[in-house]
Figure (cartoon, protein in one colour):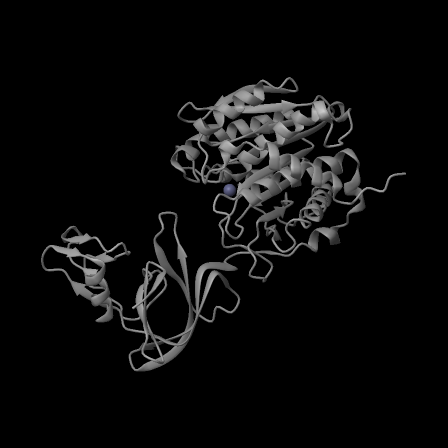
Length: 449
Ligand SMILES: [Zn+2]
């Protein structure tokens, strides 16, 4: 008997992904038009069928790709939230690799796997939201809160697919914000799993047990690549959500959230991990390997901790409020448009920054605004001179300011009502260390003065 390396099969899909994934999908965002050439290519694979199953609000096609003809039905859908594209690329990659396997059998699934399983994949359930890069659909509705009312065409379509196909296993594939950590570790949760509850009491029936066992198998495999970056999502029952309702149909339902990884702006690490994870679930189903896992294996995955991370953390900065001196940590996050604002002030010992700045014995100077009273061409030299005088903000008509400095500026219509920072404030300030050396923070970016 041949003793296989425990990760050997996943190693095969990982290498196959490295050489054959759809490189055109390496983008920070995916729209309907981005995936059409890929769908066309996949539709040409003899082992895969493509069917348009419905249309979005604005009439964009929603398609299903299917493979196999076996009795065990697996259904996966992606990008129900339009701005969560990572798994869309992953499921399309996975289909390509499964197709390559059908001629080479390099994945060692066994030649008869397609007679045991039928795999249905709906990539990009919300193409209108994808077009606008928003969570919601064209009606402004969060499809994942429409599982009961079914007022969105996309939600109705998903529910109808579930009713018709009656999946045994369902994969609900999302992206989460980058600030979740895997346990209280400071490591971003690149992948988070959940076997959603189907009742407020969170009963574990046989299908939900199988979902948890499959997750334990997937986490086991992924821990080889991501030893500290896997989280377990909170299982509070959500009455209006699809995962919870589909779990209620008796499908073993698995939520996978793709998350951040250091130096990976397009989430290609999470994309590859989705492929490896989905594939290891398929292997676990084909070989009944999941039955070796217990609930304890599932609960051993650390919590997916919300706000465990921030973009920038300044530790132990001194400030003065009225006549009162105090020391606090300050965290700063950037939004999608790149605007950096203060998130929290205080004891942030439970949070880690993607960037961490020790500001021990550094004092934030009171925020001072420079009044614009006429047109101003701002060169770098001018700006640095103003910053050295303590001005970190402009006030007045922003059209008067012609910023040629190459540095971020903040121009407010009215002078700021604050002189000390507060949550929500723009991340523009000046700080000074105990030797009198000053540094400016301009939209979160730090420069020496
Ligand atoms: Zn989502």
